[in-house]
Length: 354
Picture 1 (cartoon, helix red, strand yellow):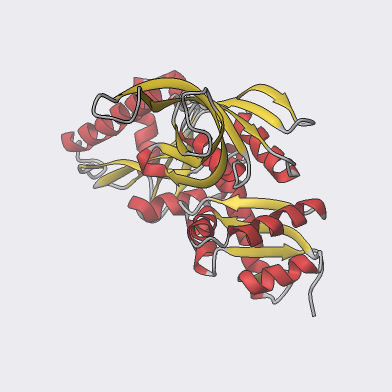
Picture 2: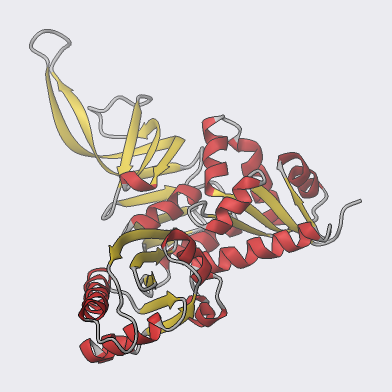
């Protein structure tokens, strides 16, 4: 994401969307009551209301008062809806309109007050993107590729083959390594990855790296090896927790979120400085005891659908005013799913409540 214009004293920020992750961030920055301005396509009626009325589509500059935010990762879009409060004369004020935001969209967000966590979220989204991380977990019979981005990881493909046993000079083994190496090359170019993580049981990863060094010695320098016990989705989750890849992932959102969730569950297991569930967290918020508020994006979407978001929004802003941290956790990865499993909302506390 790129900030085109910013005046926080007036509560205005204009941004340009570059990718799907930016839309994920915006879905948590934009809230009910904000004003959103930008160019959009609107149906315009020409003439009086009769049989000769003509309807055309026209690009107009519109401002709406936000009432609804809908983000669907797999539809590659963010819909923001509300009543029109500023528009050309031929567009009825007070009627409803929806902005369909996608890659390349530019909008201005106007808030009465920007909370610190919202500003931090905006800055995080606008940080120079370091490139996604390609992960391959493999054994002698199959390999699973995944792409790790800020909003979680997605499985790219699974390849099947068979690596020959050592000492037998099996041609199939060489072919399978070759196919894996070829796929690494293709994905690295397609997604402009900076880092590659290869995990496997036993020695498969070292043998693949030896093949890959011959094929692409420059890119091979960006490969980190890790140990895992399985392939597939479970292997990806296992690799993300390995010490070998902490250096590669230390700036990655998924890893930061996983560390916070691990800290939360550690506190819960020892009956320490943690609470979870809506009522308990709200009580901790009233006591100004929250050090870090953890909420999944799925939980926030549920609250919006159930029209219960206002209370949670007030909680986030109260934690922010009390100098606590607000962390929205993606439910796409394992840590987010664990948090969702205990209600989707929890808090690490400054002190233990009675």
